[in-house]
Image 1 (tube, helix red, strand yellow):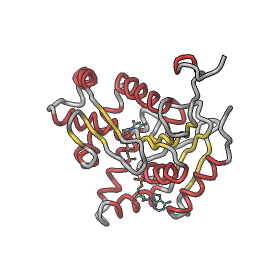
Image 2 (image 1 turned 90 degrees about the vertical axis):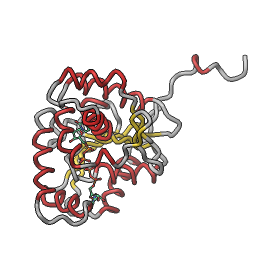
Image 3 (image 1 turned 90 degrees about the horizontal axis):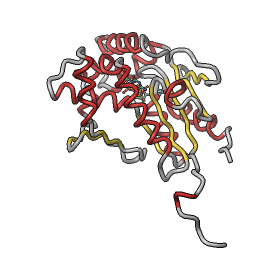
Length: 235
Ligand SMILES: Nc1ncnc2c1ncn2[C@@H]1O[C@H](COP(=O)(O)OP(=O)(O)O)[C@@H](O)[C@H]1O
Ligand SMILES: Nc1ccn([C@@H]2O[C@H](COP(=O)(O)OP(=O)(O)O)[C@@H](O)[C@H]2O)c(=O)n1
């Protein structure tokens, strides 16, 4: 017999998955996105989903400390994210919230949304779906629990770190050179809250630590790309 087999009978080919975790300001988003661009991979920002849900809670006037009320938002949480590293956007329903979810008001409440187990399960299912399906040969997914919970089987798992001083300085520069110290304080407070839920400061077994404290941006991207290229695709 010849000819292509129907899609349903074809063995599923799983694309190459890369998992990146780390604290706020370590460079997860920018470094993962640049590495994905270089490799022709998709790039998945998972923090955006937690931020988008926090944004929706604020929009609807939902108190994020009321777990059931936040869980109630999941039923019609129509979340969309661009995985193309050159076409990044975040949408909730008809609203494009790419910028709005970076607002300090969202950063201030996102950890309270992210600590709810049912929320984490729901979003984890979405993340896994995106990892499994797509036209590009691989996908880099970054967040806090990707190496441990979302994609513990990924062939490349990296913990991206940088000293607290370096992370605060980078984030402050990104936000227009704020030198008051408040950006740093907010970053540390959010990390402390997030660490109650998942450990992203210590590499789990089999996870490679990439410390970017003394590397510039290009060197960090090159180091991540080298780690990924060092592992041949399965099959
Ligand atoms: N190795 C590095 N050296 C210098 N600046 C960096 C480095 N990695 C990231 N940055 C910059 O630090 C800022 C914060 O990075 P970001 O990717 O938003 O971190 P995260 O996603 O971990 O919060 C960005 O402006 C980014 O360009
Ligand atoms: N995998 C993830 C990703 C983000 N988050 C939550 O989402 C928030 C925003 O994540 P982010 O990656 O956008 O934060 P930054 O490190 O970019 O500032 C974090 O502070 C966590 O509360 C999470 O709980 N698990």
